[in-house]
Length: 319
Image: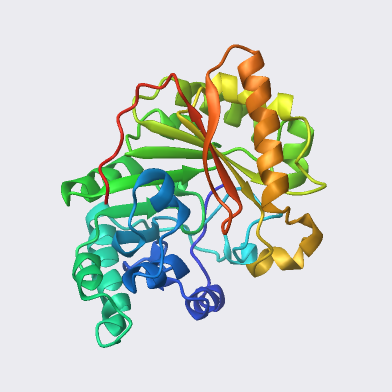
């Protein structure tokens, strides 16, 4: 599936929803999040801060590619905005994207400077971002210069998280982010097809094998949906054995954005249900001889962190 240039209508739709395009060909964007606003006011930090030391006010939430090759039912993004238009994409360079991201991020936070609620120290730090979350919208591995983009961010003294659906294992062999996430939202192919509305199960299995050999820090993220994919914890454990990630995040589906058009609120599990399911997956892993343990959680985000206690990966610096 080849991305197509976005239509004017869908460009306007995304801009209305707070996505800010950062380079001439309008396939890359940034967007500030709730946690950045809280962090810059010293009112709290997101669970990535608790788990991995990322300060939300120093994080650029961006994408190099607004397009996606899956149609996941739980996605809060406007899926109808993907792969629209008639012209093939003309890709911006990594330098254009990074410079555009930094400039737009500073513009977006500028309004906080005059607020009495803003921490002056946090604002000064926010003007010099130290982390890029390459995860905002779309599938980043569809951008043909992803490794060069990662290197460009690293040349600015920044760390990088790449969040992928795992459908492009060849790209994963080439990239070296600070941390790689693969979203794994089904224990088997049948459930995957119902959740993702796509046919990339074989590629995802290959990506799990690639992850196992990576030297960078690795994470599997499972978005848990009640009555949908919160089944067969042993099946998830088998897939995790293939990837042998450093961490596993089990996170509740959140009933927000465009997902509300596809799923009912009943699909959003409680934090207790998420923790119980994470515990079941962990039990299957330990019974197979793997050294995994639940080590942290964030109730407000309904997410549980499972750690590979046998991992020798180095911790990232606190940001």
